[in-house]
Length: 155
Image (tube, rainbow, N blue to C red):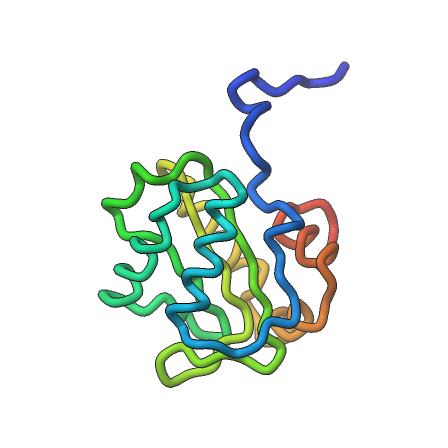
């Protein structure tokens, strides 16, 4: 027997869409990167158009560089009402891009509806817990990144 999604869930975009995985990004200013990844979240149907502004505000108050070459920009708490659906967008910088005084190689924009952001963060932490896992992801393709974060295979 097949399980059907509830009707309201059937119209939600998947947590990660392949079109929201951008490989071989060139270094650029942090604010430009945040606006780009925020734009991907908007175009993917996850957030309102001005969610990127809330991501910039979060970055101004607390850096979203979590170490290990990863940054996870997301909106401030007050921006929760701008989130339509939980989702992520991934940008890969093989040569790194400066995030304050450190290089990051993977930028994962996050929009977590309700308390789902905690599950999303836990998934990212689990999948990218070692420098080797980060390096593997940097050198991988769209399908591998998609599978890694959606649990449909991968690393």
